Structures are given as C-alpha cells and as structure tokens.
Length: 248
Image 1 (tube, one colour):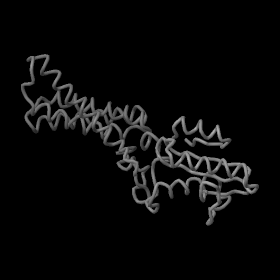
Image 2 (cartoon, one colour; image 1 turned 180 degrees about the horizontal axis):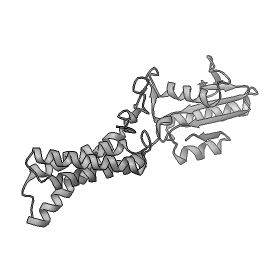
Image 3 (cartoon, rainbow, N blue to C red; image 1 turned 90 degrees about the vertical axis):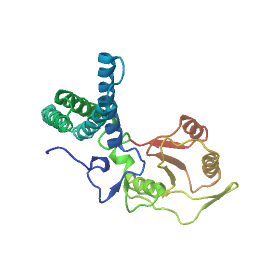
Image 4 (cartoon, rainbow, N blue to C red; image 1 turned 120 degrees about the vertical axis):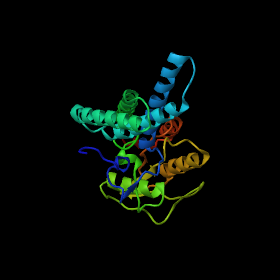
C-alpha cells in the first residue's frame, strides 16, 4: 500500500537504526485503537442492556480497534485521500473479521474505522518516529551506548570540527573528560531523556566551572542536550557561566 511504512518506528531503516528509548509509537497507536474499539462495544452493551452481555464481542472489538490503530499510525504522513482509502479498507477488514466470527459487520467496520482514526491522531502527535522524532530518539545499531550515540550526534552538529581528548583535564574535584574540544571550547553531550541535576552531574558542572576559572586553555564550555533537560539543571549551568544548547 503506497505511503504505508511498516518500519516507520525506525525511520524506515530497520537495518541501521533501533528504537532503544522504548517509546514504541506503534504500540501506543495500537493501544489507543484497542481502547477505542473495546470501549465503544462495552458502551453499546451497557446502553442497550445495562451490563456487559458478551465479553467475546468486547474482545473482538478490542482486536479490530488495535489493528485499526496500527494501520492508522502508518497513514500519519499521507494526505487526506490516502487516509480515506486506508480508512475504507480498515472498515472492510473490520466487517470481514466480524462476519468470520459471527458478529455484526457494521460494528466491526465501526471499530476498525475508530481505531484507524485514533492511530492517525497518535501518529500526528508523536511524529514520524516517536515523540522525540527519528533524528533524536533513534540510535545507530553500531553504537552500543546512549553516550556513544550522543558523541556521534555532537560531532555531526559541530561539522566534524575538533576532537575527543584522550586525556582528562585536572581539577580539584578530580579528573574531567570532555566529549569534544574545538579550539578553546569544551563540549559536553547529554543524550538521555530530560536529564536531571543528579549529584554526579552537579559535580561535572562544578568541574567545568573550575576549568573556566583557572585553565587558560578553556575559554567556553557548552553542554548539548539531545532529548531535553530539567530546568533545575539548566539554571545550575547558568549560575556557573556554562552555556547550553537544546537540540530539536
């Protein structure tokens, strides 16, 4: 089906990329679709009978909604025409599944369409490959740690300038290894989600602040965040005259 990419969760490149953040946008879409399908069937039964009279119907409605959610997520990059075709196709699939299981085909079509609509909405909200986007959350499979991925991204951002020092800078708080050194500017990269001001990171900041004060080889320090940072950490960096960049 044109425009439907089953490898959208890794930016269309499952050989080179992996979604190690575990956000799994496909799972979210399927889950939302399942809730829409199963919830609608349960609501209909409660309205008509005052209670759930057939859990099997709720089950098949949940399944149809989940399938619709998956297909709907795959249409997030399509125009309205493409989405309409998928929506119609999902309605037919839902109706066919209902007929095969002895259920009402109109209900089956409804649950499939609801799930597909929900999946498309989730896809639009989460973006093309998850909440943080393919450019940020996906990690090359050849890279074994989040820190290594961050260093690769930092080198790309800096256009390959500078180098990763093999020796540490010495401070009164201990040795300090920086991720990238470009002329007289030291760069630190943080690739985790919404990095917090932990005791270890606080110590890193204080080391950098000392280097700025006493080491003439370092005139500026930049911290780079690729998946967000807590405001307390950003404020602490400002207090210590350390600049930072929040990358989209």
